[in-house]
Length: 146
Image (cartoon, rainbow, N blue to C red; front, side, top):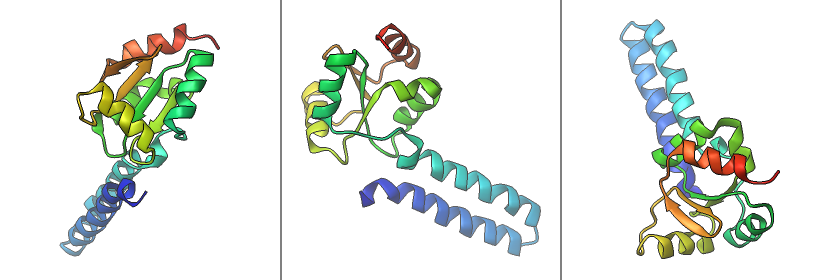
């Protein structure tokens, strides 16, 4: 759990230091712009930017019933963030599994990627797809029954 918050906390700390230093050097306007940028970056890289994660076993059983994809991800992964942002509201219709919180999820990802924890790994109909195009994932969401 702590590991998931390291990057966002570092971004907040660095943003505070950079903004304070900029303000002390006589540029309060620039400091007022930099701090929100760092706060937004921290929010985007935090676990809060993703829908609620569930366990791999639960996600796979739900996917077998409703046909929705399962996305294995981890905080701080820029490719996971890209997928999440490009899916927009559609991301709520996917089952998300944080591999740092769920050892069974990490094992599924390692089995699909020759022992590597490469994310995002998307399971569609039981078949893994590593770092797929977000538009392809969106098509899988729309083809899944509601």
